[in-house]
Image 1 (spheres, one colour):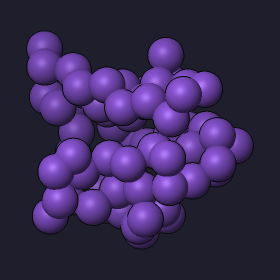
Image 2 (spheres, rainbow, N blue to C red; image 1 turned 180 degrees about the vertical axis):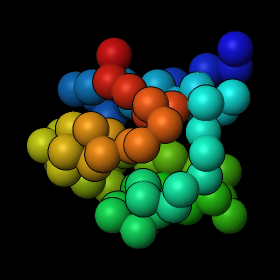
Image 3 (spheres, rainbow, N blue to C red; image 1 turned 120 degrees about the horizontal axis):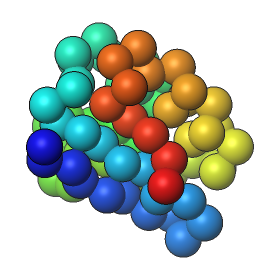
Amino acid sequence: MDTKEYSNGEITILWQTDKCIHSGICVKTLPKVYNPKERPWVKPENATTEELLDQVSKCPSGALSIK
């Protein structure tokens, strides 16, 4: 399982690449954080911790989680 970690200094978002179904909910909800055309594609510093927690809880595949 390939897992990437992205931190904003308060929380760390875990992205499990093999679970991701590319539903696009992350990109549609927080486009300043999630941009698949950029590297790194997750920039958690572009949202509040509360916004990140709310968005990650909506990931339908469970590919995104909080550490």
